[in-house]
Length: 117
Image 1: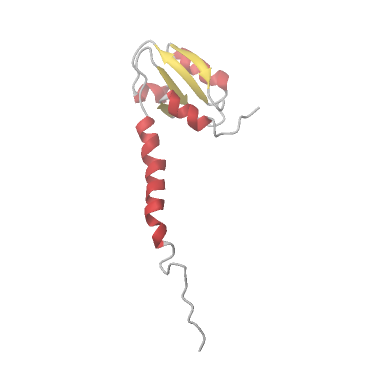
Image 2 (image 1 turned 180 degrees about the horizontal axis):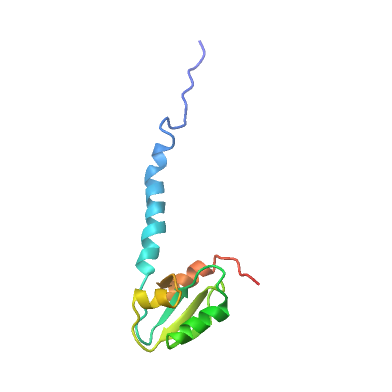
């Protein structure tokens, strides 16, 4: 009599990994959302511009909103800026920014991106 072998794979297509996938998805969606914020007067904020936006174009847009570009992020389209007044989402979108993030969070994410030369 030969021993019976049992399968070690889950029959439901990875059901045992569902909690891990749920946490990953939650982290990918919720954590960046928590980092979103509108610029407050005098505070640094990381502005994400559309891909293909040059650093020069982004700086011109920031200056047009009476802001100061403090430094460039991990890509040309990510700049840290400071404004003399509070800005709302409509103000940011009017100057072409897609999102405004906490610079510490944006810096950590930008460190993972390859730099374009």
